[in-house]
Amino acid sequence: MCPAGTSITSRTTGCPGSGNGDGVGDAARQQAYAAPPFGPRGGAARAADRVRRDRLAEAETWLVRGAILGGESAPLRSAPADRARVDVRWAVLMGMRHRAALVWTDPVRGAAEPTPPNTALAHAEVAYRAALRAAAELAVHGTAADLPAAESARTRQRVRALRRHCIPRLRDELAALELALEESEHEEAVRRRWAATRGGG
Image (cartoon, rainbow, N blue to C red; front, side):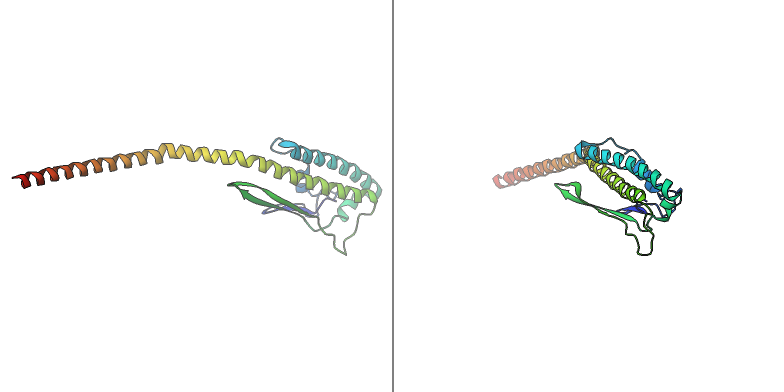
């Protein structure tokens, strides 16, 4: 009943029409059920997490009713073979990546594919799609929240490399140049004194 799979940019989580008898593939169910690996960051992330949990609970309720009315195999028989797709588009502002858009595309049921045999399963399908869409939103919010921290860590690493390697090397090179310049000035002063001595003699 959920989208037959979910493709998120280059990462794909599939639920290929086969599952545990309720029409929901294992990978897609895990994606919708899994608590995020990060705590919700900000109001938008908390709202997405709340929608995910609410729609998932709603979907489970409708799924049980639909299975009772149509039989245990009814959800699997009416699950579309197509995959849901999530396209996350990123942009860069002042050197920092941020989400520009999240485009969700529902799976398309083929003309020859059966539709849900009762309204309970139809409601379950809609609720599962909403739960997966909210899970994708939550994942994107978490990634966007982690980007500044990751960039800060990279910046600290670069600063350490500058302090430990680049700056000492540049100081050594500067000291060598200053010594060479001092020696050149000393040699020039000696030549001038020598030339003055010869001219005076």
